[in-house]
Length: 258
Image (cartoon, rainbow, N blue to C red; front, side):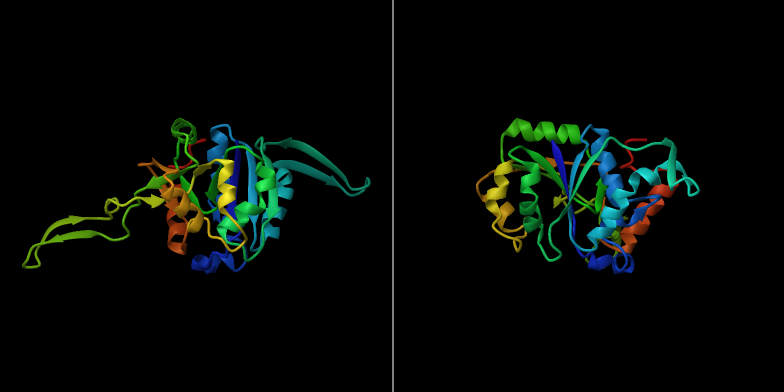
Protein backbone atom coordinates (compact mmCIF):
# COMPACT_ATOMS: atom_id res chain seq x y z
CA UNK A 1 0.00 0.00 0.00
CA UNK A 2 1.44 3.37 -1.04
CA UNK A 3 1.74 6.32 1.33
CA UNK A 4 0.91 9.82 0.07
CA UNK A 5 2.35 12.77 2.03
CA UNK A 6 1.04 16.30 1.47
CA UNK A 7 4.11 18.55 1.51
CA UNK A 8 3.24 21.57 -0.62
CA UNK A 9 1.69 24.13 1.71
CA UNK A 10 3.13 27.52 2.60
CA UNK A 11 3.37 26.97 6.35
CA UNK A 12 2.60 30.61 7.10
CA UNK A 13 2.09 30.05 10.84
CA UNK A 14 5.73 29.04 11.20
CA UNK A 15 7.19 31.58 8.82
CA UNK A 16 10.28 31.93 11.01
CA UNK A 17 11.38 28.63 9.44
CA UNK A 18 9.44 28.43 6.17
CA UNK A 19 10.88 31.61 4.67
CA UNK A 20 13.84 29.44 3.71
CA UNK A 21 12.42 25.92 3.40
CA UNK A 22 9.08 24.08 3.08
CA UNK A 23 7.54 23.08 6.39
CA UNK A 24 8.17 19.31 5.98
CA UNK A 25 11.91 20.07 5.80
CA UNK A 26 12.02 21.73 9.22
CA UNK A 27 14.29 19.58 11.36
CA UNK A 28 13.32 17.82 14.55
CA UNK A 29 16.60 16.74 16.01
CA UNK A 30 18.91 15.77 13.15
CA UNK A 31 16.27 15.06 10.52
CA UNK A 32 13.39 16.84 8.74
CA UNK A 33 9.95 16.13 10.15
CA UNK A 34 8.97 14.42 6.87
CA UNK A 35 11.77 11.90 7.52
CA UNK A 36 10.28 11.21 10.95
CA UNK A 37 6.86 10.62 9.40
CA UNK A 38 8.29 8.25 6.79
CA UNK A 39 10.13 6.31 9.50
CA UNK A 40 6.82 5.71 11.30
CA UNK A 41 5.31 4.11 8.20
CA UNK A 42 8.52 2.26 7.37
CA UNK A 43 8.58 0.68 10.81
CA UNK A 44 5.36 -1.12 9.86
CA UNK A 45 6.67 -2.18 6.46
CA UNK A 46 5.23 0.58 4.27
CA UNK A 47 8.12 1.90 2.19
CA UNK A 48 6.58 3.26 -1.01
CA UNK A 49 6.00 7.01 -0.76
CA UNK A 50 4.45 9.63 -3.01
CA UNK A 51 5.23 13.16 -1.85
CA UNK A 52 3.05 16.02 -3.12
CA UNK A 53 5.28 19.04 -3.67
CA UNK A 54 4.41 22.71 -3.99
CA UNK A 55 6.06 25.59 -2.12
CA UNK A 56 9.86 25.27 -2.39
CA UNK A 57 9.48 21.71 -3.59
CA UNK A 58 12.93 21.81 -5.16
CA UNK A 59 14.43 21.69 -1.65
CA UNK A 60 12.70 18.39 -0.95
CA UNK A 61 13.89 17.08 -4.32
CA UNK A 62 17.46 18.08 -3.51
CA UNK A 63 17.26 16.39 -0.11
CA UNK A 64 16.19 13.04 -1.52
CA UNK A 65 18.47 13.25 -4.55
CA UNK A 66 21.43 13.53 -2.13
CA UNK A 67 19.99 11.28 0.58
CA UNK A 68 22.34 8.40 -0.23
CA UNK A 69 25.37 10.68 0.14
CA UNK A 70 24.04 12.21 3.36
CA UNK A 71 24.02 8.73 4.90
CA UNK A 72 27.34 7.46 3.57
CA UNK A 73 31.06 7.85 4.15
CA UNK A 74 32.48 8.88 0.79
CA UNK A 75 35.82 9.76 -0.79
CA UNK A 76 36.02 12.11 -3.79
CA UNK A 77 39.21 11.63 -5.78
CA UNK A 78 39.55 14.66 -8.04
CA UNK A 79 42.94 13.55 -9.40
CA UNK A 80 41.45 10.46 -11.04
CA UNK A 81 38.55 11.71 -13.14
CA UNK A 82 36.33 12.80 -10.26
CA UNK A 83 36.19 9.28 -8.84
CA UNK A 84 33.70 8.71 -6.00
CA UNK A 85 34.19 5.86 -3.56
CA UNK A 86 31.40 4.82 -1.16
CA UNK A 87 32.87 3.25 1.96
CA UNK A 88 29.74 2.42 3.91
CA UNK A 89 26.17 3.54 3.88
CA UNK A 90 22.97 3.18 5.87
CA UNK A 91 19.76 4.07 4.09
CA UNK A 92 16.14 2.98 4.28
CA UNK A 93 14.48 0.63 1.75
CA UNK A 94 12.33 3.45 0.41
CA UNK A 95 10.87 4.19 -2.99
CA UNK A 96 10.09 7.91 -3.14
CA UNK A 97 8.09 9.58 -5.92
CA UNK A 98 8.34 13.38 -5.80
CA UNK A 99 5.43 14.94 -7.68
CA UNK A 100 5.00 18.64 -8.44
CA UNK A 101 1.34 19.32 -7.59
CA UNK A 102 1.26 23.10 -8.06
CA UNK A 103 2.20 25.97 -5.78
CA UNK A 104 -1.39 27.12 -5.28
CA UNK A 105 -3.23 23.76 -5.27
CA UNK A 106 -5.41 22.88 -2.31
CA UNK A 107 -5.13 19.53 -0.52
CA UNK A 108 -7.74 17.88 -2.73
CA UNK A 109 -6.10 19.19 -5.87
CA UNK A 110 -2.75 17.80 -4.79
CA UNK A 111 -4.30 14.38 -4.23
CA UNK A 112 -6.02 14.44 -7.61
CA UNK A 113 -2.74 15.20 -9.35
CA UNK A 114 -1.02 12.10 -8.00
CA UNK A 115 -3.88 9.70 -8.81
CA UNK A 116 -1.83 8.24 -11.67
CA UNK A 117 0.91 7.22 -9.24
CA UNK A 118 -1.52 5.61 -6.79
CA UNK A 119 -3.45 3.61 -9.37
CA UNK A 120 -6.67 1.74 -8.66
CA UNK A 121 -5.82 0.52 -5.18
CA UNK A 122 -6.26 1.59 -1.54
CA UNK A 123 -3.65 4.00 -0.24
CA UNK A 124 -2.66 5.93 2.85
CA UNK A 125 -2.38 9.69 3.14
CA UNK A 126 -1.09 12.08 5.79
CA UNK A 127 0.23 15.59 6.23
CA UNK A 128 3.92 16.48 6.21
CA UNK A 129 3.84 18.20 9.59
CA UNK A 130 2.44 15.87 12.27
CA UNK A 131 3.91 12.94 14.20
CA UNK A 132 2.49 10.36 16.56
CA UNK A 133 2.92 6.82 17.82
CA UNK A 134 0.16 5.64 15.49
CA UNK A 135 -0.07 1.86 15.11
CA UNK A 136 -0.25 1.83 11.30
CA UNK A 137 -0.88 -1.91 11.19
CA UNK A 138 -3.97 -1.60 13.40
CA UNK A 139 -5.12 1.44 11.41
CA UNK A 140 -5.01 -0.51 8.15
CA UNK A 141 -6.71 -3.53 9.70
CA UNK A 142 -9.49 -1.31 11.04
CA UNK A 143 -10.02 0.24 7.61
CA UNK A 144 -10.19 -3.16 5.96
CA UNK A 145 -12.65 -4.44 8.58
CA UNK A 146 -15.40 -1.84 8.00
CA UNK A 147 -15.39 -1.75 4.19
CA UNK A 148 -16.03 2.00 3.90
CA UNK A 149 -14.36 4.47 1.52
CA UNK A 150 -12.25 6.33 4.05
CA UNK A 151 -10.73 6.14 7.52
CA UNK A 152 -9.33 9.13 9.37
CA UNK A 153 -7.25 8.93 12.53
CA UNK A 154 -8.97 10.91 15.28
CA UNK A 155 -7.29 12.15 18.44
CA UNK A 156 -7.94 14.37 21.44
CA UNK A 157 -5.03 16.81 21.69
CA UNK A 158 -3.97 18.26 24.99
CA UNK A 159 -5.25 21.73 25.70
CA UNK A 160 -2.76 24.57 25.42
CA UNK A 161 -3.85 26.16 28.69
CA UNK A 162 -4.52 25.05 32.22
CA UNK A 163 -8.20 24.44 32.99
CA UNK A 164 -9.88 25.97 36.03
CA UNK A 165 -13.08 24.90 37.75
CA UNK A 166 -14.53 27.95 39.55
CA UNK A 167 -17.20 28.30 42.20
CA UNK A 168 -19.79 31.05 41.98
CA UNK A 169 -17.51 33.11 44.24
CA UNK A 170 -14.62 32.76 41.75
CA UNK A 171 -12.77 30.38 44.01
CA UNK A 172 -10.69 27.84 42.13
CA UNK A 173 -11.88 24.41 43.29
CA UNK A 174 -9.98 22.41 40.67
CA UNK A 175 -6.92 23.16 38.57
CA UNK A 176 -5.78 20.89 35.74
CA UNK A 177 -2.67 21.82 33.77
CA UNK A 178 -3.15 21.22 30.03
CA UNK A 179 -5.89 18.63 30.28
CA UNK A 180 -6.53 16.15 27.49
CA UNK A 181 -8.86 18.10 25.21
CA UNK A 182 -12.49 18.87 25.97
CA UNK A 183 -14.02 15.61 24.80
CA UNK A 184 -13.81 16.60 21.14
CA UNK A 185 -11.96 14.60 18.51
CA UNK A 186 -9.84 16.23 15.81
CA UNK A 187 -8.39 15.16 12.48
CA UNK A 188 -4.86 13.84 13.02
CA UNK A 189 -4.32 12.86 9.39
CA UNK A 190 -3.05 9.30 8.90
CA UNK A 191 -5.87 8.39 6.51
CA UNK A 192 -6.55 5.13 4.73
CA UNK A 193 -8.49 5.72 1.51
CA UNK A 194 -10.10 3.72 -1.26
CA UNK A 195 -9.28 4.89 -4.80
CA UNK A 196 -12.93 5.94 -5.28
CA UNK A 197 -12.23 9.05 -3.19
CA UNK A 198 -10.61 10.59 -6.28
CA UNK A 199 -14.11 10.79 -7.80
CA UNK A 200 -15.03 13.40 -5.18
CA UNK A 201 -12.26 15.80 -6.28
CA UNK A 202 -12.82 17.91 -9.39
CA UNK A 203 -9.88 20.33 -9.63
CA UNK A 204 -6.92 22.05 -7.95
CA UNK A 205 -9.14 24.37 -5.91
CA UNK A 206 -10.84 21.63 -3.88
CA UNK A 207 -9.94 21.35 -0.21
CA UNK A 208 -10.04 17.63 0.57
CA UNK A 209 -11.21 18.23 4.14
CA UNK A 210 -14.23 20.22 2.96
CA UNK A 211 -16.47 19.11 0.07
CA UNK A 212 -14.98 15.63 -0.52
CA UNK A 213 -14.79 14.47 3.09
CA UNK A 214 -18.04 16.22 4.01
CA UNK A 215 -19.84 14.39 1.20
CA UNK A 216 -18.19 11.08 2.06
CA UNK A 217 -19.32 11.56 5.66
CA UNK A 218 -22.90 12.37 4.57
CA UNK A 219 -22.93 9.06 2.73
CA UNK A 220 -21.79 7.28 5.92
CA UNK A 221 -18.56 6.25 4.21
CA UNK A 222 -16.09 7.91 6.62
CA UNK A 223 -14.94 6.08 9.72
CA UNK A 224 -12.70 7.28 12.57
CA UNK A 225 -9.84 5.29 13.99
CA UNK A 226 -9.43 6.56 17.56
CA UNK A 227 -5.85 7.17 18.63
CA UNK A 228 -5.54 7.93 22.34
CA UNK A 229 -1.75 8.08 22.66
CA UNK A 230 0.71 10.69 21.45
CA UNK A 231 0.09 12.91 18.43
CA UNK A 232 1.30 16.45 17.83
CA UNK A 233 1.29 18.78 14.83
CA UNK A 234 4.03 21.28 14.00
CA UNK A 235 1.92 24.34 13.23
CA UNK A 236 3.94 26.98 15.06
CA UNK A 237 7.45 27.65 16.31
CA UNK A 238 6.21 26.72 19.76
CA UNK A 239 5.19 23.30 18.44
CA UNK A 240 8.55 22.87 16.76
CA UNK A 241 10.42 23.69 19.96
CA UNK A 242 8.23 21.25 21.93
CA UNK A 243 8.94 18.39 19.51
CA UNK A 244 12.63 19.30 19.50
CA UNK A 245 12.67 19.18 23.28
CA UNK A 246 11.12 15.70 23.28
CA UNK A 247 13.65 14.49 20.71
CA UNK A 248 16.66 15.82 22.60
CA UNK A 249 15.40 14.35 25.88
CA UNK A 250 15.30 10.88 24.34
CA UNK A 251 11.56 10.67 25.05
CA UNK A 252 10.12 11.28 21.59
CA UNK A 253 7.01 9.04 21.64
CA UNK A 254 6.77 8.83 17.85
CA UNK A 255 10.31 7.40 17.56
CA UNK A 256 8.93 3.86 17.56
CA UNK A 257 11.71 2.58 15.27
CA UNK A 258 14.48 2.98 17.84
